[in-house]
Length: 191
Image 1 (cartoon, rainbow, N blue to C red):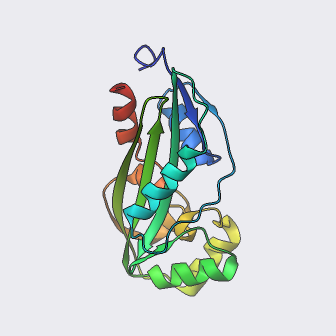
Image 2: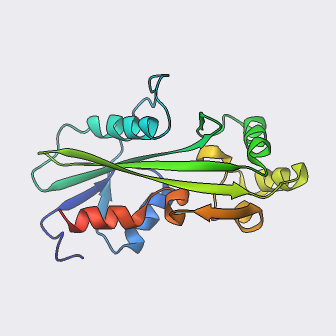
């Protein structure tokens, strides 16, 4: 992989430790560059339109790329009952989200935007996740011990709640964690 990308510098515009870890696990050399972007999207957008818009919005902040640079931006939401669940505002918001999703199926949607000096392309992945029935005690235990307030939908599949509470997953596991690594790898190798 390294030989195919030796002429490109990969830039990850994400503070997410999970996304950074994925690129390391893919054996990619990359650097992190962050720019503050107000993540607000038009209210009429639905599902993947939201994540595409936000990933592209984050990429648009970088207008100074060099010829050999590839910028990667990303956005993930939980899509549940026709609305987007982003990161919870606080403990009570997280509790409300998890109680609502208990015993039901939701979608985790991640869009990844690749930007070079010449072009911008966006791909996305949708994964269906079904929770078992979760008791309030289980949810509170998870929130108290794992504090998933930086995660869309108020949970991390790779954490305790994923081990005990997920009945079924249809699609990419890494997408639920925060990045569809198979699609990212394929895109980068086809540059």
